Length: 169
Image (cartoon, rainbow, N blue to C red; front, side, top):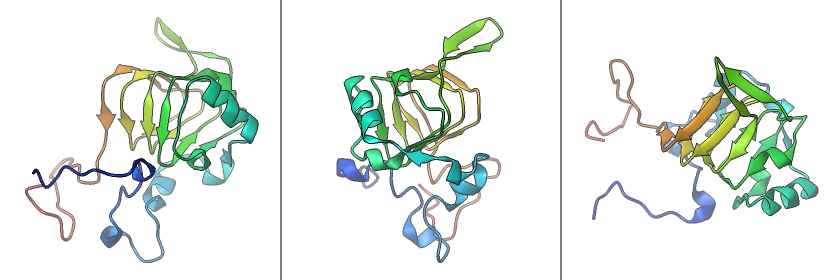
């Protein structure tokens, strides 16, 4: 068996991005994400029961709706047939169209799997099979992407290893 492949319970999917041995004392796995996200973490709120029912009626799922946070204004009708895992923070969403040059799409999230991401205000995520551990700025369009993820062992530039990290990983 490959020692990199793991089987996790659904309730753990999207959590534990930073292994505990790499967390500074007194910090949680979101401390860097809170610094990098331009939006104040205090501007998010929990979904109310009516919004959760509406989301589920639109074929959306989450093993823990308590970890799906939103900003106002929030229109749950703009989210359809999508899955949410881990801490997902969604910026304001209203009935708008977002455009880049001649490409225009409605704001919202449709047919997508979102894993532990921060999504800015007025974004459009359409047909994204796997979006994991990203911070999206405001007014971003993600369209027909099979997989877009970052990992806790991603290497950029010179590829510096963290203390205790296996160089073959």
